[in-house]
Length: 318
Image 1 (cartoon, rainbow, N blue to C red):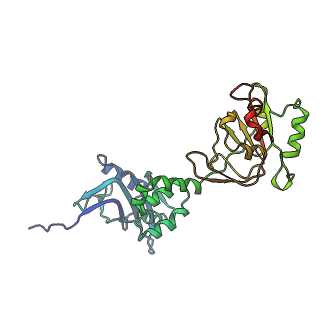
Image 2 (cartoon, rainbow, N blue to C red):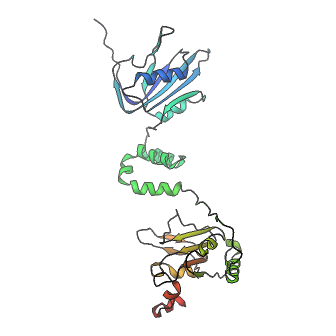
Image 3 (spheres, rainbow, N blue to C red):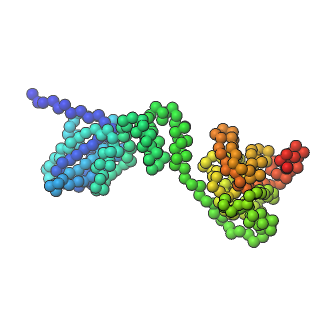
């Protein structure tokens, strides 16, 4: 009576070793992909390594999108018909796919196919949250939390994503004017800019903002944005860290209806440090002492001059 094999494999990540196998890693990868045309792996990495006695062997990490199940211990046999030789590997479920990937790649002699998906098993949540900030990308950060603390990942996803975006925020690209400065800028604007638009250490004690009101297409926005590092707030006020920086020389506020401009006195008066609590946003500390250029067009809903001339706006004028 033939002996029944006790082999059973049920895993998404599989670690395979072909001992004393001189098949090239490229051919091994090709044959493995050919084996699973109906249930193709999502990722395969094959590396070549030499034993101390000089004989080669292959290490393989295979990942499937769903759990791969089989009782056939010959399923990963490597058949070389030209040599009439069959290489039977050692097969193990890989609990930590990232560790296996790094281990088999230590000599940098490998080939791969597909997209790798990490599956590290964390001993506790502390280990997970210690490792998460060390990841290179926001995607890896989120995947680390998902693997190490799936409950919190599901329940507090928005908070985790918000924290990740702060940790991996990229510096706002500095604006580059598409046109050179015009030579017909009024003297008053040039004098104001020379006095107020400066680095923090060179600013005067009392800064002054300016309102520039003119019809469209006269170049006021291009001029305002060409004076140095600045925040550009257009259409509505948003002070989150993606669009607003405290490390600029001045603010440009463009086409925001004056009656909807919150923190009017703080911006126009270049006041000291203050806290914003814009609707739907968390309180944000805004570093003061930054002058503002207010850009607007004439008209009842856009003119700052008409808005300030109203009798009930005496306090703002003062």
